[in-house]
Amino acid sequence: MVVGYVEFIKVTKTEKLELTMKPKLILCLALVLSGGLFGCSTTHNQLSGLPIRYHNAQYDLTFYLPVDWKNYLVLTQQWDDEDYLPALDKTVVPEHGQIIILRHPQWKTNDLYQDIPIIVFTRKQWDEKEHAKLWPDLYAGGTIDEMWHNRKYVFAISSRYNAADEVKDWREAADIIATNCAAHPEPTLYPNP
Image (cartoon, rainbow, N blue to C red; front, side):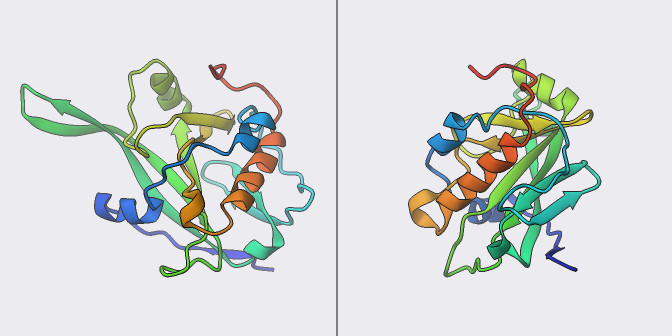
């Protein structure tokens, strides 16, 4: 049974703004209060109320969605760590990674629904980010918080991922994220401040 399909697209910086819809609100308080920012494992058990399973074998990432997300889209976008080198008057990109965007099946350019953007870091990149050696070019302001991790990768979410009053079902997306995070109760790699 097919519950979704994968579409890979290359996104330029200009298109990135359109995809992220200029998020401006902090991560839903329910996510923080539910302990949704803590966790690590790669458990693949069915989550209650979320029967649709998305699995990315490359990153060993499993994420569950509700039935109304049947035929959702999977988009990919690249994040970059851009460094300006004043001596050369040039910007370089020493690191980059993927953002896996789960898009509601009813999303249209004139009828926006909240995306779920899962930011993927290698464990080395996450360590560099936590030690201020890596500054990913992601949503302006806010924080990037670990949802959970596995042996090789850290899965994160920006506190400014949602566009709340600009899109439909942003609360549902926050609840879906919180439920998936709660299924990974182990501590994060670095304690959240």
